[in-house]
Amino acid sequence: MKLIMAVIKPFKLDEVRSALTEIGVQGLTVSEVKGFGRQKGQTEIYRGAEYEVHFLPKVKIEVVIPADLTEQVVEAIQKTAHTGKIGDGKIFVCDVSRAVRIRTGESDAEAL
Image (cartoon, rainbow, N blue to C red):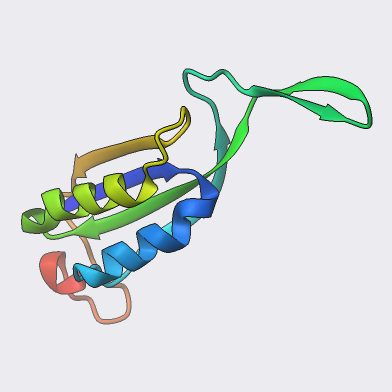
């Protein structure tokens, strides 16, 4: 099993969710997060005053999948979250050694 974490621009969330659903992902977790990468934030103007925003709003998607779906999921996220502009985000892939469904006690692949 693999844990895929993706940090993307918020307006891309619906597209990414649809793409993942189409390839068979049955559930995912979404968190609103803030952060910065190479762009180091951005400068904005509010009521004529210029100020810097150091942490930009992002969305973090987490999904645990069978290992054989890894490349499909990564590719789907990469294609749908891509805008070609700085700040598109990152995708992280981690191994998951165990999963347990609390309600039924099912474990590992059955718990997904």
